[in-house]
Image (cartoon, rainbow, N blue to C red; front, side):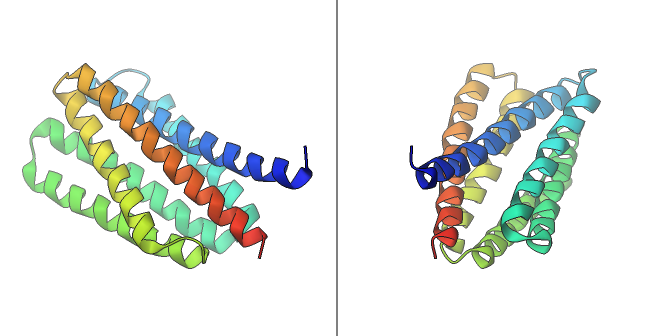
Length: 180
């Protein structure tokens, strides 16, 4: 196989692997948080380790400064998800509304950052991807709190489809930037 084709496939593979791991561990985190399971600490640590691994991958491509900006998005996202689950469990509508708005604002900020990182990436497209990502994450929490396991599985299927689109779009942008 041509080394160029092989390297392109590796970019797709690595980005899909990150996003698969991210949503898998986020789902585990949601389940452990909602159900107050005793594995919450190691699951949380594993979720954050995935984010750190991805930041290292991005550093190799975009440098430290851009990668740190992405890291702040991921950290803020995961922290707000934790707070949102707690607020939902308490029925604290004021904090639910605030945290939901912050999650969408964070997604919008990240879309802007991604658009600046790579000329191939369009802010509008990233907004669609990341808004959908936030929406589906919230739907997963709601389904878990309601004990609607069939809906939770259906939503997770949508999450997977969304992250494959995100990973592929991200890979296309990275490959585009190397071919310029």
